[in-house]
Length: 251
Image (cartoon, rainbow, N blue to C red; front, top):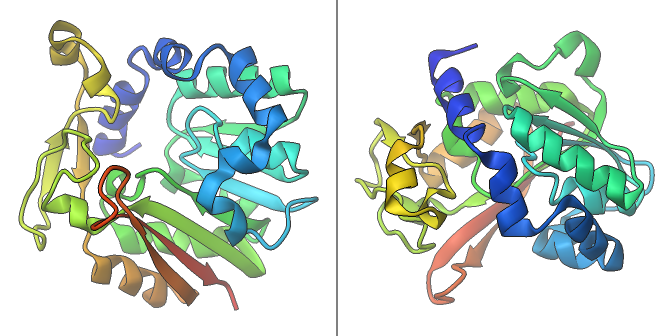
């Protein structure tokens, strides 16, 4: 495992299970909300899927299963790839409470077993700010292509690169030059929810934030065909971009 992945793993396993219970509710409570309205839980990501039933989905950095469980409820066969054992524990308990099956592979995403999963998935799906955890975006995108079957689709939704220069999503992350290629040490995404004493003890992550052109070019260079690139308003300020979704297909 890469050094930066090992550090990020420590961060994502620091009291993560208890955080999800505090933030999302017990696994049973989250399962109840997912069962009630899985499409609502998928939010804007739902319409990027052509269909759900029987679709094999790789949920990259799927974390606590907040998107994987509604996908499974809609009939998809979901495999989460994530670095955190704590995330796995919570997600599998939610799946059990929702009476659906998901698979969960813990480890460095870049070390996914290609012999097992190459060409296996109809969709690779990621959302919620994950690209910055991978320090070589070309390597990452090439892996996404490898995982897809022919004509498979990548749905990559992430924080907008505008957040490099402005904390528009109020994530309390450091800002920098838009064109910076530096690896920066940052707090966990949910560190801001803890009091200062606990927050100061939490392991940090090592992140590399990308520009729009770096993201789009990585999709193109790996050989995927970019079909659309949508920008979404920031959560609390609809006048500026806060997120984006790139959709690409394997020829």
